[in-house]
Length: 152
Image 1 (tube, rainbow, N blue to C red):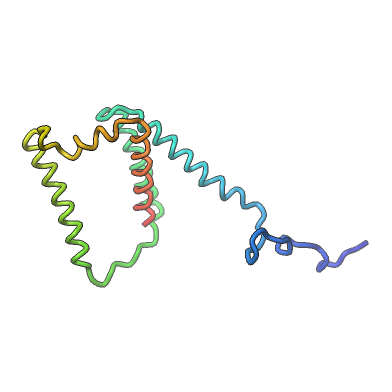
Image 2 (image 1 turned 60 degrees about the horizontal axis):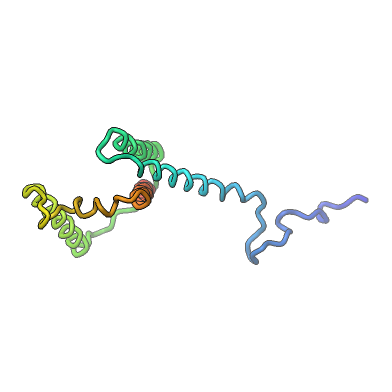
């Protein structure tokens, strides 16, 4: 009738689906949070992709995640990665050359009026970002890169 404490099965005694990993009941809530956040980000990117460029609504759509990420970064700063002992000059020089070339391309296209035979980078990318799905995907990638920078 009466059972000793050692006879009562515990959660850790239950078999797990994966050997070597203990059974953890109630782990479904941990999966729901990333799914809800992901669905919210996809919905936000879809709404942001529907705004017309260079309008007040598109400005607000861009500022909202920027302000949220700035608040998160200042309110709860992450552990910083220690700086390297020395700078990799070769790697930095590759990035400087690429950024300088893109800056020169945009500056010369702006100076020349962005003629069809010398278009600016934005004139080349705008037709690619025309479809709503592509624009929304680009905004979603932009949000995820921003979050990765804040977490770093």
